[in-house]
Image (cartoon, rainbow, N blue to C red; front, top):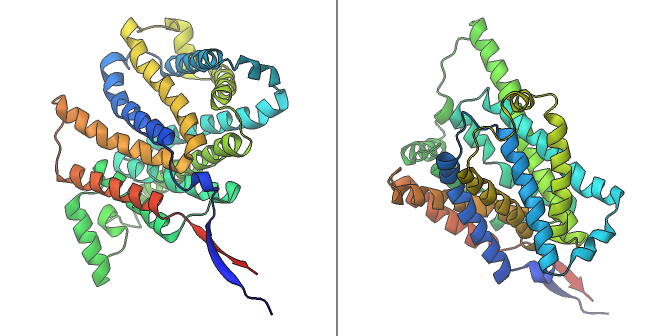
Length: 358
């Protein structure tokens, strides 16, 4: 007879159980970048004159240049000699294409949904990232981590002013008493099913608003998991990968200009119409943010990137309050505390598997 012992081990590699100091530093920097980006964009980019596609293209070109400079500074330019078209197409073109489809789907949804519904569904990206990390990378989430992600979703809805504390209280008490439908707190609609116009509007909203946005959320999770797999499993250099991803994005964006209104606007007004030297400030900021996303995905994963962006929302609120363009209210305090609680629970209680040892 043999004795068996049961040990509990993490489903992740040992070095991924806790965030490293480097990973935490990257997360903090991304949160700051995300927080200041709206203010910089609002103050330094004239949206009525500047073509959005030109801004995105300049961002990708700058990101390409910064990544090359870092490779040169670190003495790693020889990595470029290992470029293979097949690997580039698989690991860079596919995610870049997915990002393009995601942006188109989100734009379609934005044009057919009210701001509240858009913000609600748009916050499901972190849940989507967790789902695809499990499907593609077998990164399982513990029950506590799943609960933490739901808390993060709730915090995002409160911070985005989609869900007010009074509404939350009514929703919770109504659910507890069994007297309210989970979506009843939001819709509160009294549409007549016989009203043909209302029915058509509802169908348009669903098929051309909700469905595209859910698709964008799923694509966001899928592309994030693909990038994480490339960086963590395949072990690719994050700056080299940024170079490859930038090349793919630039090609896709350039081709898309041949068929879009932005392309016609650029051909008429010029590529840099509405630009000034200060226009480069938010562009450089966003380029650095893109590089940070790659570093975080490699060091901490795409789920933690979602946490960093929500923290960025908190910091953005505080920044607006300091600049006198916004007020900090009770919802912001509650949302911030929920974000901290969610991050603590998610990092403190990773999934662990039981293994029997004879």
